Every structure is written in structure tokens, then in C-alpha cells.
Length: 412
Image (cartoon, rainbow, N blue to C red):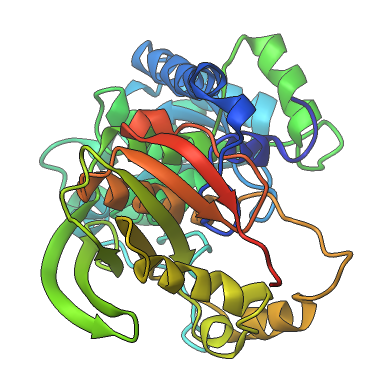
């Protein structure tokens, strides 16, 4: 797959943009498994390279930096690695670290006190240098020494000088499940490979000083024999192999359609709470369950047209609960959501020329959380109700089977 939307391509293999699960009858288990295997193989190949003290190329989403970084576990860094990054990649050599390293070294975050730093921005600390064992600090050997000292067990703030020639980056505690950046991705993959939560990264630039995009990165990867891994794939890999939600509350509530059971789940990544409304029997393991997954949006859900568009997509989930068959309406909390975007979507809802967008990493997290909630409810076989014809693949990794799909009509 060539082109700038490499990460999106892999994301689209798994999730549809509106967190509405969908699968076509022609895309049953064989093709689903093939796509899932391909993504898992991509991540595992990168993990194996990191284990073997090799570098990989990590790419992010087009909506973010749309860049590729060289990534190496910090424990494996040598002067030769630093020299390669400086000579071949040409970008800024940085040291992504788990938060405990930043706290232990008492490194302050570089920030502008006059504005709020956006969640997707990189958390640079003050630059550092090893206090002992270096000369000017800029040589490949000196920078490798600084990395070694910074991540060593027992290192204290007194062992580090500020400023310096290595740039630590503070990774989010939840890794790529909290922030889909190279900082978190590099730390996550280092830990997957059995190393500390520390990596060395460097942006890849072209000879003319422009940022390398996917066609350039593929040439670079082939030339140097490096695997490419997408942050979107790391998100999916973690969601498949980790449980990030837990049930925290359950009780019966009354709705206009009768009594339903409300189950609240909490994400261990960001402490956001999500709601599942279930009707019929809660013993789902042996039953075919009608399922609708919807992302919370106060503006769209409250003011969207109930007969079509955003309002109907919300209403269709509630309508499932009034039927005799077992049903689950999964209502996902959406962090840091813009009401401006919602108003724009309301204005665009009836535009016949509007286009479906490819999934972004933040969508992937919500989709994965939705799948984990479905699994936690004991649902195994689903009749999925979706507002989008886009295909969802990879549910088999969550132990879920889509028996039937109902494409929601947006007018009736």
C-alpha cells in the first residue's frame, strides 16, 4: 500500500469511522482472519527487530505529523546508532521515556505558560547531558553515553546536566491508547520487546530537507532492511492483547420503552466511563444479540434530526431496547470533543456529496473499547446495526462473531 494514508489503510481494515460496527456477508471469517494476521505480523516483525537491537520505522496518521521516525530501544543504543540517525535520518534525536523516568530525573516540561498545550503535542522536557564521561556532548559517543546514564537504574538528577544535546520526551502513561504519537509508540514497542520504557527516535528527512512521506519511507526501509510499523497497528495490537475496561456499576433503570439494565464501564487508560444499556436476558453467551455502538455527542444526539442523520443514528440504538429480542446499546464517552465539529456535522448531515472519512487513531481506541465492552457483557454472536456501509474486520480477535448486519436507513 503506497501513499500518504498508509496508517489509515491499516486502520480501515479494522474499524469504521462512526464507531458503528459493520461487516458484509461476503467478508466473513476467512478474509477477516487474513487481514488481522497481516497487521499482527507487522507489529510482531517490528517487535522482533527491536528485540534484536535493530531499528524500525514507525509511521503515524496523516491527520497528525504524517511522518516516519527511526525507533530503537534506548537500552540498545550505541554511538553507531546515533551516527546513523544523524547521518541518514537527519532529524532531531530524542529520548522518549515513561513518566517515572521524567519524575525521577525531575525534568520539567518545556511549555508556554500563556497557552494550553494540545493533547497531541509532543511533551518535550529540558534537554539533557550526562554530567560525567563526555566531552562536548554533541558527538555520537557522548549522546549515546547520555542516553545510557539517563535510563540507568539508580540515576539521580545530580547525574544529569541541563541543558544538553539529548531531548527527552515524556510519554503518556497509557501509551498509544492515550496518545497516538511516536513518543508513546516507541516506548510501547520497546516494552513489548522486553526492554525498559525508553526509546531513541529520530525523524526521517529527505536529502533536500523535506520530511520523508510514505513513498520515501518505503525506499528508505528497503535500502536499510528495516520493517515499517504503523501506530494504528500498535493500537489494535494492544487492544487485542490487553483488557482496558472494567465494569464499575450496574442497575436497572426505567426508560420510555420499559426497564433496561445500565452497566457502566471504566477505561483503565484514561478513567473515562462508558455506558452499556441492555434489554432482554443478560445471559448473552448462547443468544444472538442486537448490538449498536454509538459515540456520545451532546450536540448531535440532542439536536440531530430523529428521522435521519446524526439524531437518527442515536435514536436507532434506543429503539433496539424496546424490542423483544436481547439487545445492547453501547454508548461511548468521547474525550476532548469539539462542539464546533458537531455543529459542522449537523450542517453537513444532509449533504448528498459528503464523503466518509477513514478512521483515525483516536477512533481506533473507541472502537477497541466498544469491542471490549461487548466481550465483557458476554456477547459472542451479534446482529450489528450500523449507519455506515464501511466494512469492519478483525472482530474475531475479540472473540466476536457478526452473524448478520442491518444497515440503518437514515430516513423512514
